[in-house]
Image (cartoon, rainbow, N blue to C red; front, side, top):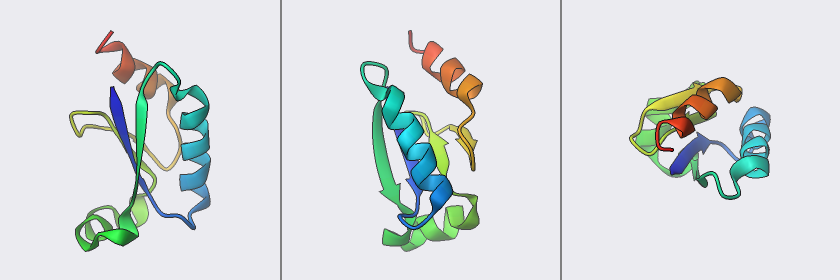
Length: 79
């Protein structure tokens, strides 16, 4: 499964969630980092909601802080 993490490089919540996800990604999922400041439409859509974690279908798993239970449930759907 490929997860997408929308955030900003200077956002401490974003870098924290990215580190948490990378620490557990091996063999479970791929993580794609997308900086919303690089795309006007994404900045307009997500603005202050970052970080936002989406599954491979584009369904939001969580935002602001990593919801481990929601992540595990999303990953279990494909197992």
